[in-house]
Image 1 (tube, rainbow, N blue to C red):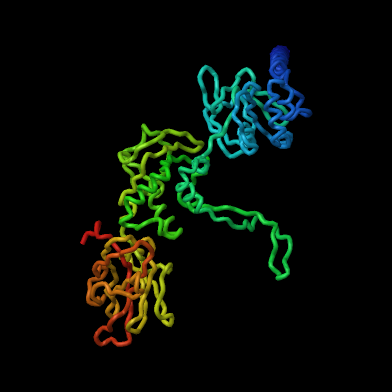
Image 2: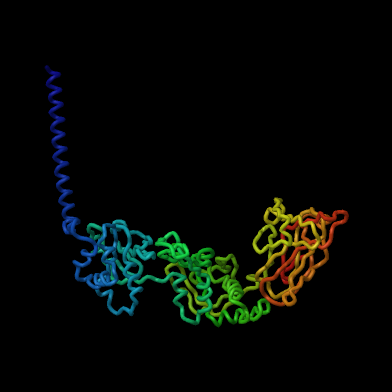
Length: 496
């Protein structure tokens, strides 16, 4: 019986403790619920209000609201998606310069990001906007934040609805151009540099996005055509229009470019007499040092700058008209004069004989074989079992300077026949022999064979020929060309 009373007493105490815990929990829940209602009591009905209407409800946002409607953002802001909009007050629209319709569309789109961002998540970050450019959210101290050039009103944030949230800011956000856009909007005194970049645009049909709508009378497909533009420089060298990367640009005016080209005319000749392709090749050399990766104000430029094409530029050779011009993906500096270092163009020209580009053979009856050897410049070299005296390998070599070159070549210790280098004369079209005939069979493997020198009197593309000129003793009809590379080295930098 005593045991039963103790058990009953224990259960009674447990019941009392449970009742107390439940009572505390219910009281706490009610208090939290009251705070929840206090916190969210003034929010709009989620089912009936979208971002556009939320902005419309505040008279102090009327200028921004009218711009949203005028420039076609009403559809975006009423869709079922999550958005954050940084909304400038009416005062932010006072004293603005005149903007075009396209500029206004970019400006308005620059205030919108595709996500719900609440003030509790504010931290230093870059926010991608609907126009592909980034807003810089930064902590300004004392629990304040800025968004690019504007201050966020921390007393008017987190106004949310069914498809997003808005925050009030005190200035209109104006997107900066990126490096490429900045260059394209420069005036006509920069036309040489601008035209050079644009000249690498290639416009073509985007077949993946174009819709086939039928055929013509010849049976050819007809497309509702969508065009795409690709640019060799932007796609293969430096993505100057990429908002996620950073560059520093050094931009010359037309007169600077002209003076710089005239200063090296002894190597290239008169640029006014060049065809368009050759002229653009020379400009590519001239502008080799105009961009570098990363963002450098003038005070932190390294003493030696490595350009996006791998060229070295000494800071001491640079003079500036304007510096530290900020763009969305970097910094621009306007040059006062342009220097083209000889190291940009006074370089050996390597003709890799195992590459088919710009290569021809005299007799297609016989095949050109590619053989492997780790000692070869590309790990491989060429065998051309041509058989007859006079057969040859021939190459077109672009960007040959108006200067004197040493001609050398290498090959394995193989092959019967005496081979010789020839260069095509620009005037007569005849092939001029360079140096004496050489037999690989009598030479050390892979040791450079020195043919001699030749002085080119005109800059441009040249033709070089590697030919069988004499049969090896006792090997008639078994001639072969073995060659790894042919190299043209300017006399000024040639080291025997």
